[in-house]
Image (cartoon, rainbow, N blue to C red; front, side, top):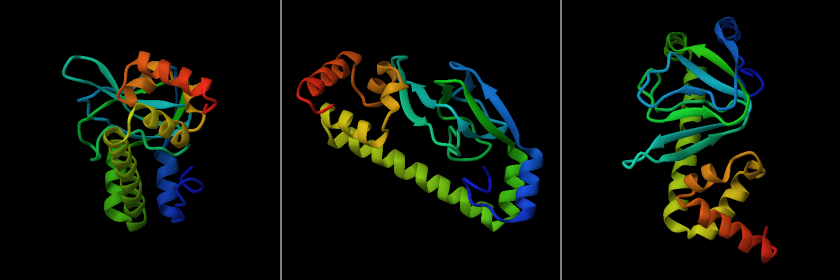
Length: 188
């Protein structure tokens, strides 16, 4: 993964990461970490499907993001070693690669190539979150769902309507009506 997905080439970085990395299998419904916890390992998705979520002021579960591509970081905050801003849950049986945070911090300070990778991953995550924010405020419910279907092809078959509706800022009833209307009009 470090070579193929992230494009790392420095043999010393690869050796140290591969020595310390551990592949972990997690079951559907298992939580990687809870909001407020300080993760001790940096996790990357190998296979499966994750969602980040938080509770709103009324205690409702709000889906913030999905991770489904190999190499996706399962981070719940912007800073390594900081408390998680969201909780992360497995929506399917999943495999992750975990690397101890102290090693990651050491390698980031020592190797510019790794720091550049970290910066690219942060910028990608920021762009995705800003994109979601723009969609949430600029599109009506129908256009938000159509955007979701284009942006996350096939994900609607793996994720419950409850989580999709939450992610798109609508109720399950609204989502169900939208799906029916779009199917009946041949747009789905």
